[in-house]
Length: 126
Image (cartoon, rainbow, N blue to C red; front, top):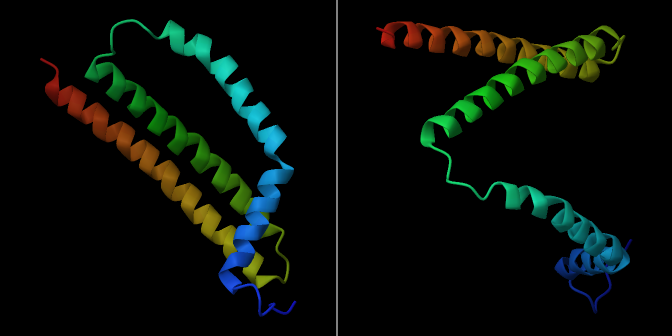
């Protein structure tokens, strides 16, 4: 596709974005309204006193552990599937190998963080 001398090259992506925005404007507005309707009751329930720092950090710790655990296991399994089904495709085999390495390292890091925090709690307990 040749560039028109009347339109600068940088303007093409802006025009495409505007077209897409006009095309999907109804669904975007409807999605935002649905989000506001469903989130508003939840926000009203959380109107109590602010959570303490220890509770926030505990929730963050639990979330990080869950992400490390399950994302690591999923990456490990998906990487093994991709690697072992790659046949003669070296790019696919390399991607599968890196997914497996990432999954294994996330799983090892999950156990390492768990052990590290358990040791710190053991040291801190009277």
